[in-house]
Every structure is written in C-alpha cells, then in structure tokens.
Image (cartoon, rainbow, N blue to C red; front, top):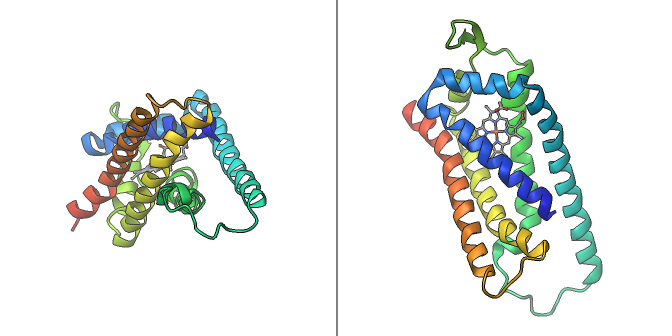
Length: 207
Ligand code: HEM
C-alpha cells in the first residue's frame, strides 16, 4: 500500500503541474492533453497507473479485513487519540474512488470517445478542444461542488496516508517522524488547494 500510495502521490504532482496550463495557455493545455493521450510511453504509464490504483484498493480491502479479524469486538473505549483522518481512510478512499469514476467518465472517456469541439494547435493543425470541455464542466455549480468535496477528502486521505506510507516502509524514527508528518500535511494542503483552484476559478469567472 505504501509503495502504490507514494506512486499515486507522484502522479498527482505531475497531473497538477500539467493542469496549470488551464490558467496560462488554452493551446498549451490542449497540446498537453493530446500528448498525454497519444504518447506511447504515457500509454505504458497509464497501465502502470491503473495497476497502481487497483493494487492500492485491493490491499486496502485485505488490510481492513485483517484488522477486523484481529479485533472482532470493539474496544469498550475507542482510542479517540488517533486522528479522524486515520480512522476513516477506508471511507475517504471509497469517496475518492467514486470521484475518480465521475472524473474519468467526463474527462478521460469524454476526450477519447465523446463529441469534443475542435480548435487549432500552435502550428495551425486541428486539435480537440479539451480546454473548452473543462471550462464548460466547471461552469456547472454541482459539478464544481463534487470536485471541491472530492479534493477536501483527498487532502485528508493524503494527510494521513503520506506519513503512514513512510512508517510502513520502516522509516519510523523519533527524530524524523514529526518532520515527515509536517511534510505530509504540507503536501496534502498544496495538492488540495492546487486542484480546488481549477473548479473555483472556472466557476467564478463564468458567473
Ligand atoms: C480540478 C482538478 C482536475 C482537473 C481539471 C483534471 C483534468 C483532467 C483531464 C483534462 C484529464 C484527461 C486528459 C489527461 O489525461 O490529462 C484527466 C485525466 C485523469 N485524471 Fe484528472 N483532473 C483533476 C483532478 C484529478 C484528481 C484529483 C485525480 C486523482 C485522484 C485525477 C486523476 C486522473 C486520472 C487517473 C486521469 C487519466 C490519466 C491518463 O489518461 O493517463 N484527476 N484529468
């Protein structure tokens, strides 16, 4: 879980950086999405990504079952010292999965098989206008709201998951663990605010 989780974290960073073109240059964003959906190396990475998601989810189910089997009766006094994030990783993970299905259906499937408007790239050649598709999606309040809620839950999932991954691979140390926790929180906040900025920006600039 730790390795696949950290791999998915690196995907989030790349995805976030790629999406910044939504703010700076629609043509560059369209060229970036074309590159992402046509480059053979990215195609291979896509398979690795799907395998990463599936392994992460299957491991989570196995781990939850093993934990339940090890503790069939709930403690009379639950340990409330553990954070809400750590006690609800299964819940936040499941909601993120639902978010991901909605996201891939509209953007990934929509781009590949949907009726996407055409525009021109920087050389004047025809290209699918993904920028317009993203902009139109975020002009709908309910769709933007799904993203804001999804990203906030992703933030709580990352906040616990990041530092937990380092513990799982054996990096647990009195001196370094607090720093890893702080880096994890900073990472979770940066990713959450970064992704939330897109629906909020497009929603409010189209009012
Ligand atoms: C506001 C935030 C987001 C925007 C605007 C956005 C936009 C897009 C777009 C336009 C695509 C299709 C083109 C491409 O492959 O780049 C895409 C694909 C994808 N997105 Fe997002 N995304 C956002 C957040 C997220 C988050 C938070 C996750 C994960 C939890 C995610 C996971 C994915 C995945 C797995 C794909 C398919 C990647 C592939 O085809 O290689 N996205 N996204």
